[in-house]
Image 1: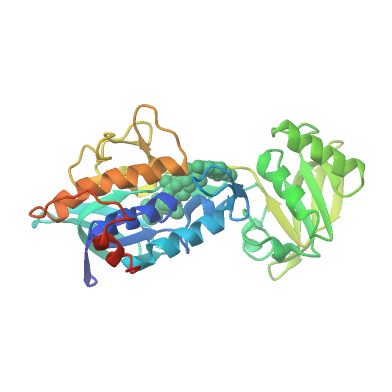
Image 2 (image 1 turned 90 degrees about the horizontal axis):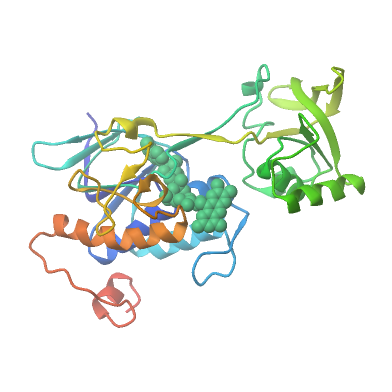
Length: 342
Ligand SMILES: Cc1cc2nc3c(=O)[nH]c(=O)nc-3n(C[C@H](O)[C@H](O)[C@H](O)COP(=O)(O)OP(=O)(O)OC[C@H]3O[C@@H](n4cnc5c(N)ncnc54)[C@H](O)[C@@H]3O)c2cc1C
């Protein structure tokens, strides 16, 4: 077994809610280690919609998914959180000393007094189109998400799908790409009416191409696509120049190993109480999209509130002999010292 890393709280998931837990726990003198399968923090915000604007974060009239992640990272920096990225939290067990031991698929072993499950929708995986050898092009020419619009400048792009993601990205990438072709198996979309109208307008203005059909062949060399073959509505094979293929067929969310953590689950969500956001297992908490309680709203701001209440109960486990005080950051010298602003 590798060297055991000891901390106060292990957070599974470095999405926005997991990140904000570091802040609330830090104010109450608890150190955190975070584990995330993704190679960077931010969860859905950074992975699925880094450049999309969010309009319902308090005091930020508009902020993109990536900016929110960056601001959270800045806010938690004084508490020096330790990240174990690109690792899946695989096994959770109780030690003889009464600590929680979490092991990742990379063999990292962490022990802590408390664990916060902030795993969102679990490990999310894109649904892939059934095209032969698509994996040979993944990450070089085929992408299931857009991390940086600039990477697609002056490219022949083919976007596949009929939902909001496909239409949104067609609109967002059209101004930078050399040419965008949108492919869907029929002439109707499952997206917001406003987006459908805008796509129709782009088509009529000749600014994008639209092709009914299904992608059947990928052609290229060394992971670089040059064209694709599409079987159209009349069963003819149509060739389309293509540097990058962006299929948006939705995501499957898999709870993954968390299902085997021995926690009480309800429809793949973790029931918690709304006073402490603790699961039915003492010392294990859950915040953000993965938890459930009456009235739960899967919004980022809900997770922020949950983090604050969770931290107060975690404090009782981590500092059983200390008195829990309620303090404002505006007026507490104690909190300001921890935040390094005094
Ligand atoms: C397109 C889109 C637009 C949205 N717009 C808004 C909006 O405008 N306003 C709003 O409030 N919300 C919005 N949401 C929802 C918002 O993104 C979620 O509520 C939020 O991301 C939940 O945060 P979280 O930290 O709970 O989980 P997530 O962001 O899902 O992060 C969970 C993290 O846990 C990791 N993880 C899961 N299982 C494991 C494991 N076993 N080991 C290690 N890591 C693991 C995942 O990799 C992930 O990084 C939107 C969502 C989408 C998809």
